[in-house]
Image (cartoon, rainbow, N blue to C red; front, side, top):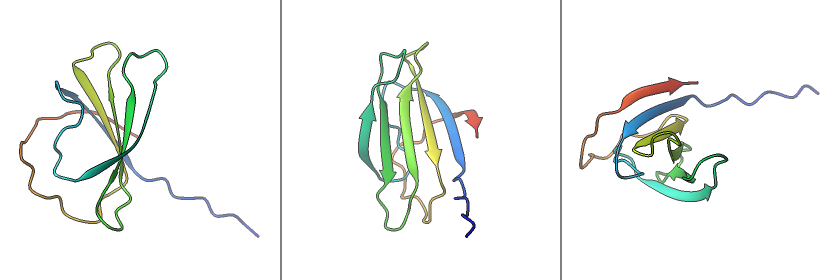
Length: 97
């Protein structure tokens, strides 16, 4: 019997200058974890989208070289439209895997 490889979800990463860790991106998130990051003073936080049947995950951490910068990594694609964001913020595109 041949094993099928699991398709990897697309990842998108943004770097944003911000005083707050979690930016309003229009979606609702539930924090499910946090861990210490090697060689960094700032922990990494893990979130899941709260919408039913949406499996998108989000990681948030501060850049170790510049604590004013927040790195947000999204994994997956939302199965729904975002709610109206309260504030719009500008994101600098950082990386795509």
